[in-house]
Amino acid sequence: MRLRQGQFSFLPDLSDDDIRTQAQYAIDNGWAVSVEYTDDPHPRNTYWEMWGHPMFDNRDAAAVVYEVNECRKEHGGKYIRVLAFDATHGWESVRMSFIVNRPKEEPGFRVVRQEAPGRVIRYSVESYAVREPEGHRYG
Amino acid sequence: MTESATYTDEIAETSDDPVEARPSSIDLASTFEESGVPEILRELDETMIGLAPVKRRLRETAALLLVDKARREMGLATDTPTLHMSFTGNPGTGKTTVALKMAGLLHRLGYVRKGHLVTVTRDDLVGQYIGHTAPKTKEVLKKAMGGVLFIDEAYYLYRPENERDYGQEAIEILLQVMENNRDDLVVILAGYEDRMDRFFESNPGFRSRIAHHIDFPDYGDTELLQISETMLAEQNYRFDAEAKALMAKYIELRRKQPHFANARSIRNALDRARLRQANRLFSHATVPVTADDLATILADDLRASRVFTMGVPDSARESSTEENKE
Image (cartoon, rainbow over all chains, first blue to last red):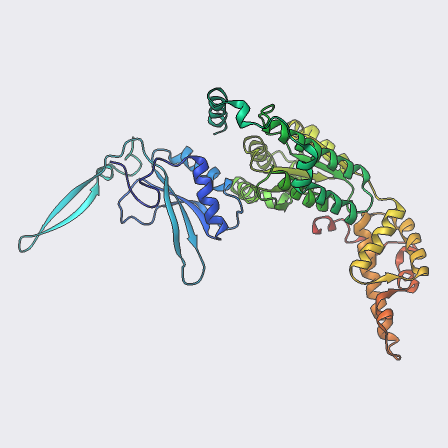
């Protein structure tokens, strides 16, 4: 099951050139671009591991593509995303977020049913991948 | 990435009609005009005095790059040319200023995307402990991407007397990025000629990756005098006739003394002359001063300089560390 999170997730995988174009758009808007990775793709897992610092004073998106490729070398089998953070007053939040790298096989999510008192059923989702310990989840 | 790019290029060549995609002729003169390069060259001619060989090299480089661009449009060349350069010359000969112009030039010609100049020295690249250098160097390189990285006094990166020096690590990363990210950034190394030569000898990797060596000659006496007048004019000052003659004498004497840094020595001398002028005006403040008085540097303001009385020149103490400041 293909993970659909963030922007462009219903499109085919972005090429390096696409990433560059998008990142350049963010930089031109004055947003700080950063790269993050994770092997726990739960939709509520908002805080992924940071790959280096956010790139506050880079003027060209080539640096972002460079970092994405560096991150791929180390964490090629995990999810990698690019974020653009807008620090302007009133926004102070992430303006862009898109996945740029995904594992070869994405096992998807299962529904977990929990019985609560009074015949209440609580539902949640869990990735099949996270049943393995960290670092062993995607091949 | 580059591999896949050339691969798709080849496909395009065989499947599409190549004649249609490419112009059959290019008007070099009009492309030259349109690129905005003449503007920069003109500006360079007007704002920088002397430096004839440097200007010539710059014009040649611009022509080469323009022709190269045309060749690529016609499908005659495919590789991005190596644009890394080395600027050698004594302090105060305008290396940084020319590097700034070079960044603009490359930007106009479309060889760098942003055209900003990032000036660094050893301190910005080399870390203080194990594992500190690589991230630091990479940070600087990322900042320079899309523009020009200017490494002042590049030979300090390599310290042969200390084999554990972290400079070597910075050099390796630098070389790697210079090779792999040629499309993304242009590196300019700068420094004194003899020490740069030694640096290149001990790091053959650099020599082979640098295509353009530009040598900055020292300024002549008349050129320096002209420079001093331009510098003053920029700040709305001027010499009177006697002061101008004395300035010529000053330049001649200053050159023979240690730590002579060409235009920078002149600027320092002028700064001190302005200080003395202000003092003079202040101590004789019995009559009201006119705008003319405020703008004129008299011979007295220069004559007080220690250069004339010989001995240690005013700037001997600062000039060795001064180089990075520009």
